[in-house]
Amino acid sequence: MAHKYLSKIVVIGSLLWVGLANAQTPLGALDLKTISQGHHPLKFESPEHNSLGSSVDLGTPNGLVNGSQLVVKTLQTKSGAVNLSFADMIWLSGDFIGEPKQIVGLSSDPATTLKNNLNGYDKYKEYLPAIKRIFADMLRDTDANIQAGQALEVPDDYNYRYNAATGGWGGAVGAVLKSGLYLKLASYNYDHFGQHALKTYITAHTLALELASKANTAAELNNAYFVEGYADHFLTDLFAAGHLRTPRAEVVNYCANLPQGLSSFLTKLMHDQDGTTGLNIVNGRGETWFGAGDNHYYTEANRVNRTRAVATLQQSVDQIFAAYQTRNANVSANSRDMLLSLPDPSATLALQQNTETYPPLYKVMSGANANPVINVYNGKAKGYSKMKCGASSITAIWNYVFK
Ligand SMILES: [Zn+2]
Image (cartoon, rainbow, N blue to C red; front, side, top):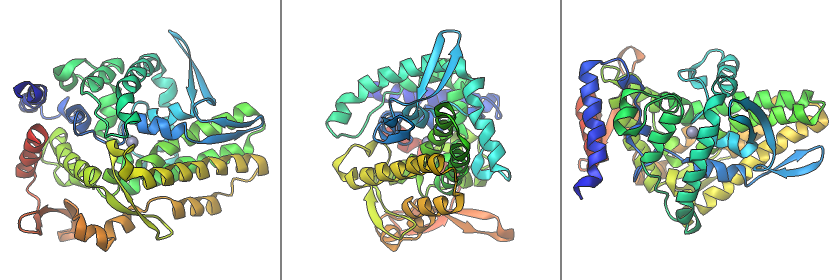
């Protein structure tokens, strides 16, 4: 029993210790993802992202090719050539490769911020061989869960291995002391939530449509699919219930007095709650369906949501091929059509069925001088009160270790 908690307690102990020693870094780079996982994964884990990518077929000049088979980028590394398939792009983008702190959702020039993230594929290419090896191990470890339609349980150890493979230190304590690219990206993963995810998807899908409309060769079309793969990571995040209404960036801003590692616990708590109970998801057309979150992707309860996610992903890649064939990016009509199919974070947040059955743990309210204030739901009192960041984060940590 005790050892089950030990690694988490070690992480939290080191986190607090490092926090006292140095409130800026590396604690600032510590995120939920270090301290989550196990029974409480942060989000749709990579296997779900990967299997979504393998569930669609992409149009090419030589006919349809499955997303797991179409190589969209080849990078020369010291350990040899690395081929990235379209499906690889979906699980890698934003979670493993990107540029930390380049947040498309918060950017006034999202197209440039997106390119800074895409440049990460060249800049950090030497990490790719190890990331792909660890990922193959992870798929093997989670396969039994997936086949049985159970919730995924990805051991904590994978986080430490990914951290070590991307320039950080290994082990639970090492992860706290030195973040690699993996944990740096997780620490600022605001783009993976709500409206930020939507903006990131649309920005990248727009670029992919434009590239496809100008492509003359199969290689140029593959480059459009490379960018589309980046976009579709965020498309698939939107089908994870824990990503739709968790005010990820807002809570970190509101609790700016806390080290970021601690305030990240707060958003993790809500993310896990919505991911576990699930939500009624609303799309741009006003259709609603039930979706579970995160590690529940393969469960029976999530079947309808899974079907919706695959169909919407297929719609998105079909637009890319149509842009190539017609030489017309058709950005506004295409974006409008995608927004009809995609989960709408605001409508999902506002849906009365959700506020009654699954009251959001945090609500963003407007406070004095239009500064947002975070209110917290109290299950016993069945009401909201203003968040006290310090006390709430201790509750969140308690929950993480013991629940
Ligand atoms: Zn994500």
